[in-house]
Length: 356
Image (cartoon, rainbow, N blue to C red; front, side):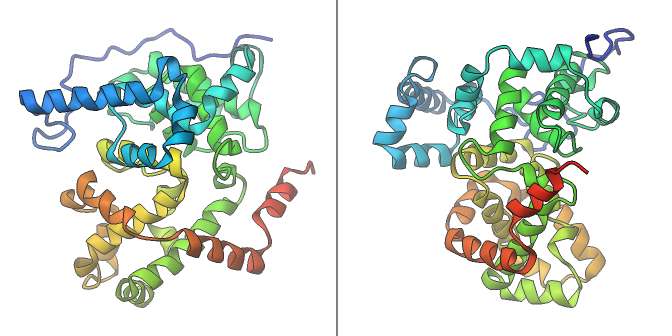
């Protein structure tokens, strides 16, 4: 078969720009992501100690990871909630997601999918690529290395799982992963997430009709009413439902429009603990902004739900609030309630996957 990759010709020329510590073009000099604060000797040493602890926990190339998790799961959970050191994030994400095992069990599969297979979604992927993290230097250049890598990962997945194929929100997942690992590693982590290597599979977020999104929104709406009754009642009065503001939270796991430093911390926990952190962070945001939200009329409320204040987006403020919320038991009860009303998600997925 003809090799299918984005053409390298007509490379765009990207002028030199100032970027923040994550590689995003600086928009405002005072934005949290753009500020590169000089570390004191004490802070530098503390960070180095933290990295040494993590390296000891992981072992060479991840050799000690599984053993450490079995022996000290609470230590691992606590450290992950504090944030994985950025220099180790890519490796740890692969270890906690189960994607490293998938990669080792499937040598050569990714290359086969990229080079020799064709996808019905290729034009859709090409059309959407420029919308994924457009302000990041890795993805800014038209047909540049970042856009080519993103195309390859998304195309490979659309061939690997033709039932799901390609849906636009998947680009933000793949794009985030590519900032921390190779194409092949990012592909297998995407597989691990959508097929459920460790946690419940995410593929229902992207199937026709978005069945898992509908379930999550049902669960979230009930959690809002139970944890934040005043907010829940005000939303009912203003005819606001979660599909109007929270769908992208679940589809992209907060990687679409949230500050990158916050999205990374959420992803650390998401990959280890599963989707319940998305519910917790969503509830924490509404709780933090409770007093303002209950006063706003419809239009201002919609604006507020898409533009949370900067202080609400501070991971060291928001995440401890999220961790304090207990939702696991109630999520399971609401899932069963939803399935009783609408039929099991697995059955609806199965029907959608049957050939016509």
